[in-house]
Amino acid sequence: MMKRHSSLSAKRRRQLVQAAIFTIVAAVFAIIFLTPIILTITNSFMSQTEINANYGAVFARSEKGGKVFISDVVHLKFLPDMVSFKQYITVLLKSPEYLFKFWNSVILVAPIVVFQLAVALFASYGFTRAKGKLKEIIFFSYIILMLMPYQVTLVPNYLVSKWLSLIDTRWAIWLPGIASPFAVYLLTKFMRRIPTSYIEAAQIDGAGEWQIFRKICVPLCKGCLYSVAILVFIDYWNMVEQPLILLSDEEMHPLSVFLSQINSGETGLAFAVATIYMIPGLLVFLYGEDYLVEGIMYQGGIKG
Image (tube, rainbow, N blue to C red; front, side):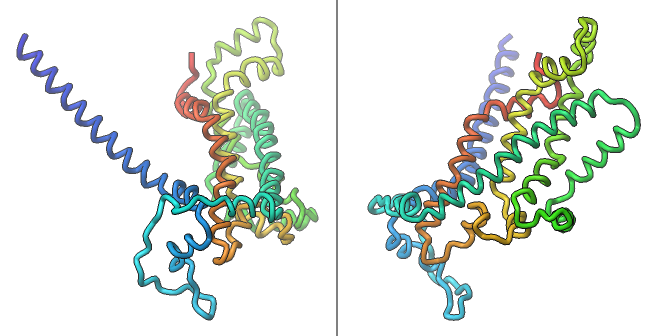
């Protein structure tokens, strides 16, 4: 009895040690990943003079406009000597172009998220309920398209948009985004794991395809829908290549493109704009964190 108790105690100690090691490793990685975000937020409250004193060497350029070799050690500073809201006053009140670009991002991304999910719901239901080899061939084509990086399909998208006279319009961004196969693939894989007994029971009760779709499939896919919405939003909120190639009018560019165009003399503004730019993504993630985890956890089955 004592031997068994000793064995259990040793096993318990090993588990605690392993848990402590994993916690420390996770904490280290969390700190590494969060450091740039924390620096961006705290440095946005620094004055331009303090930013130049701390990071001037990083953004210095030669007389020809090129980068210069940094011979000095750059000291990262997390807390400003004096909190300044000058950058935010400039961004929010004195320079409306920043807010204009922010709303450009919203106008470009919101329709893509909403309509991509709508298209994916109906397409996924079709892939789930339909039978035959043609369905499998089409779904396999979706998988191939999803595996391709956007840079591969950028030229065909440009040619099709030019043929349809959509270049320099928001439709050149909206249509490829709405037709993206990413959401269709995830929702189809999720719907296929809905027990057939649910659908058969509904059919016995006289439910048609629309009722099965609306009252069974959509409610059961709620967690997956939130997960896909978060991932799609973050993906298109950070898009750069599409607007640069398909929108030549800079007034239509989103804030993600405009951030890269802030010159070295406006580093403080860049920190403030980047902080504002992060807020929607962080709010979406924090609001839908539980749904995101639930959607990932139950990809292997439906929660009972």
